[in-house]
Length: 132
Image (cartoon, rainbow, N blue to C red):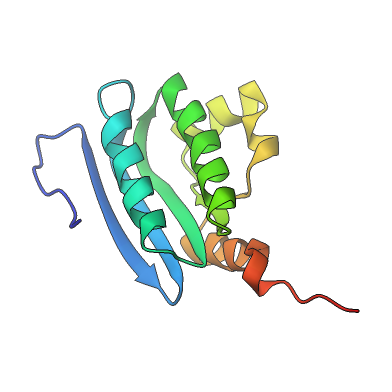
């Protein structure tokens, strides 16, 4: 999938790759009307078998309660695919509901994409070194 470029759309989503990490970037509104589209992008990114997935929500201006469920679902999907997972955002529109509901404690959230990528890679099962 390529990024959606309709400027009148409530959401624009695109996937880029940073080494072995799929970065799904979201701009606009995450709500009931856009949740299914974003979910499809997450599924498509994980179908490509990345070592890790980062959701970049730094361009999100509206984050509805359905977004909380979507983040938890994305984390579980990543775990089932043996991929690391992290979120990048410094937007109050996203951080406030994550904090108020306690969902922030369930996720690795970082203010920048590079920090989220590093954390997601470190959390990826294939990145872990086991000692006998």
